[in-house]
Length: 282
Ligand code: PAF
Image 1 (spheres, rainbow, N blue to C red):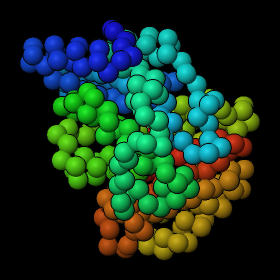
Image 2 (cartoon, protein in one colour; image 1 turned 135 degrees about the vertical axis):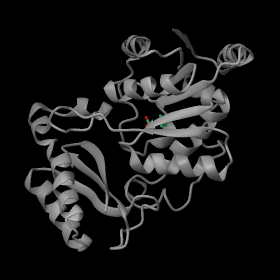
Image 3 (tube, rainbow, N blue to C red; image 1 turned 180 degrees about the vertical axis):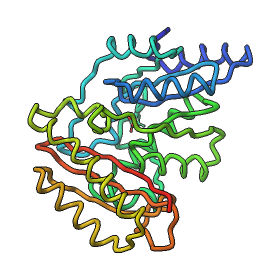
Image 4 (cartoon, rainbow, N blue to C red; image 1 turned 90 degrees about the horizontal axis):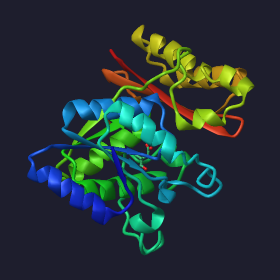
């Protein structure tokens, strides 16, 4: 498995693969990889001949006071995990390679509607940063397919829409959330949790499951269910950012007629912000 840091080198290598008629899969990441990421690489390897994993801690998607500076950079460890998962090529550019003119002068991609609310409301500019870097990665790698985790449900919706709206010829594949045995969704940020916080963290998924059960039983009083879920999180020692019951496609508040409903949650444990989601069909 090779690692390249420059776009020029990346393009030269990928040109060679395309000339051999190989299909290319992309797995965009910010590194600090765990089993959630390697499951994306395995999925990409099933759907394409060559898997390119990008590792780039994208400054544009971090807000002021967020963890850009402390976000773990673990390239050597990541390379080992990627090689084991069947990855072909690692693209690990630095910020100057991706944003040669700096962030202030960078053309940006804004995705209306699905970027709004939920994480978009709590983290202004976040999805603009994600949409911009993902569009750039699509142009750099020109993959046939790209795989993203369903754990970042709103991010996946943003990426699906930008791909459709900008007519980018890449198939977007969503991959199921990988969980710890106690249900906690795997996340690079779980490493920030203290031992006590880690013991409380599974409450996020438990609360999702309990609320989903109520929906499957036919409850349509979504406001009451959201309020009860926020209270359960608070009682367990979390600080809920939001707990929203939405239409799975539009991410707008769910209505009683919706057959596909998703529960979206973000909550703080100490300074760590955890997100998760669960979809139900009715
Ligand atoms: O999900 C992530 O790790 C990031 O948001 C992504 C898609 C790699 C863009 O920086």
